[in-house]
Length: 63
Image 1 (cartoon, helix red, strand yellow):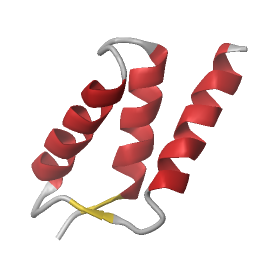
Image 2 (image 1 turned 120 degrees about the horizontal axis):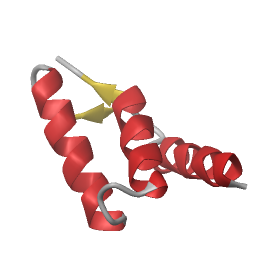
Image 3 (image 1 turned 135 degrees about the vertical axis):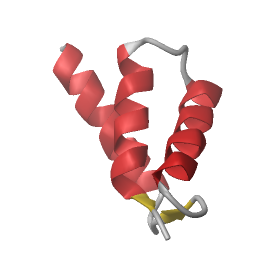
Image 4 (image 1 turned 180 degrees about the vertical axis):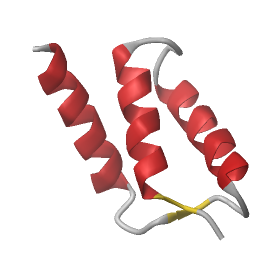
């Protein structure tokens, strides 16, 4: 069940961001953006937060 929840969360991140997220230049900008986005939706340290963060990082476009 836990893995299904993580998969659903990752898929929702990808679905919400139909185009790549432009977070600025460099990987630090993506980390900052994805951390803030995940924290706005979920409690940090939870499986949902981690799944959202990881999905965001997969779709984050670094200049």
